[in-house]
Length: 286
Image (tube, rainbow, N blue to C red):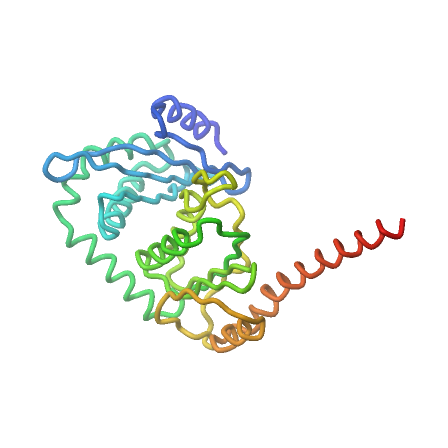
């Protein structure tokens, strides 16, 4: 990451130094840095609106635009989408210069004006979705693997809410200890889902304390092909057998994906169990 970007991160950490205002979520030499800023902006009726802004600075930032995600319990999904679009429009005018603080100041000063035009965000979101579902090139499939869910009921409701808000269809699948999330929809919406999945405190740890999901893996991400079924909704399903789960993938035209990425999860578990049993037998022999 460029030296100017590093300096900007240090400055931001100093500016947003209040409780829970600043948090670095991930840092990588290849993917850049992802961080979250919690702030407030004046909304309608002079009421303060809490905002959660997640920025992704790629390694070549500020020569390129940052990734931005906007969330707030006080705003509708359409409003969050509109705020994100307006921030990206502002960012286009600031390319080549560190811009995050300026973007935060801008939204603090302009949120009220944006909320006074709700039809813009709502309309653009509807049009974007209509386009992405009508054109196959806009549809993608992503398969995720979760290690576990401790607070299952709340976790499932949260996943369903995210999928609904982002207009994603697919399946949340349980088969024994295997947990899979199959998402289908606009690629940008899937990326935003992944940000939510990795940055929100969606589960609890062994002590019952809320925590972020750290044990999730992306098994595959690919464009929807002609043989793939278009899911009409996002559904939660439990399967009693591997054959039943396999049939779900085959019905959706995803048998190749199942054989390449899902079967191995079951065999891996069996291999671990076999090795543990073998170790116990060896101990008895010794």
